[in-house]
Amino acid sequence: MALLEGKVAVVTGAGRGIGQATAVTFAREGALVLASDIDEEPLQETKKLIEEAGGKVLCVRADVRSREDCENMMKKAAEELGSGAIDILANIAGITRDRVIHKMSDEDWDFVIDVNLRGTFNCIRAVAPYMRDVAKKEVAEGKEYHRKIINTASTAALRGNPGQINYTAAKGGIIGITRTVAREWGPFYINCNCVAPGLTATRLTQPKKKGDEYGIPEELLKRTIESIPFKRAGTPQELANVYLFLASDLSNYVTGQVINVSGGLVI
Ligand SMILES: NC(=O)c1ccc[n+]([C@@H]2O[C@H](COP(=O)([O-])OP(=O)(O)OC[C@H]3O[C@@H](n4cnc5c(N)ncnc54)[C@H](O)[C@@H]3O)[C@@H](O)[C@H]2O)c1
Image (cartoon, rainbow, N blue to C red; front, side):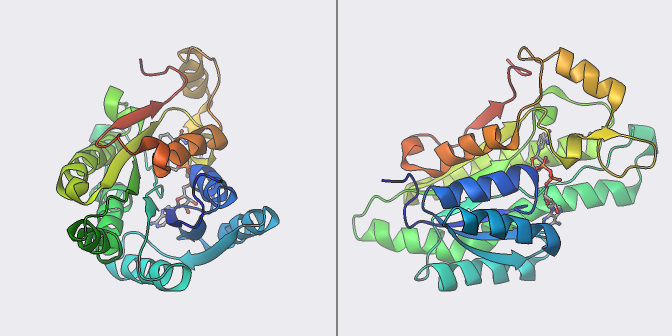
């Protein structure tokens, strides 16, 4: 049997990179996936990949900064893919806006905190009626059924990273959220863990030329790769494999943890 057969899963940031690979991997393993992203166009590619693999997907444009968007996406997942419940939430939407400390504007600080940290909180609060409340009733009936929340931090939050004071603050906050949810919702058999990707080959880490919004300057990219024991970046699929483990019953006794997936960048 597939690892996620019949489970209802919500994946944010599913239009690109790690989120897209995770949405496709979940669907291949039998999950009914709500794939969401702020950008509608790349979501169409995710839809195509899932349908080609014979999976079921519902695509919803949602900005995780918006409470209303998050509530709407959870309602859709619970009502259109499931019968009122959600089994898995993978919070993967994220963004960078790098500046050294003395040049960091209020706007760049707020933007990165809002997408990464508030976005994760918004999704967890919005899933509560379909995950926490459903699970609470099941526990009262004597049932032990595990549901999964997987958040996304970064090794940058563990090591510190010049130029990323906003991002490391947000990702550090996500680790705090993970531990609190694990304790608060653990009695309802809801596991909450966090993946901390190292350098992964996506839009966020492409070689950055002057004027590019995303990416890493080529020299810094080279130096980072040099410090990874495997001497290469990870692939989105290598990350998705760990989200799959944390979403499946294989990880039922794992909660409140931060799992580095970094090829040994952090040891
Ligand atoms: N790539 C890396 O090396 C790396 C390292 C550490 C952590 N991460 C984290 O992994 C996650 C995925 O990043 P990625 O590397 O795949 O980047 P990516 O840019 O390829 O994908 C991120 C997706 O999130 C979406 N998104 C951005 N803002 C959003 C919003 N407000 N609402 C909804 N969706 C939004 C984007 O449209 C994009 O499709 C992020 O949380 C990122 O911080 C990545």
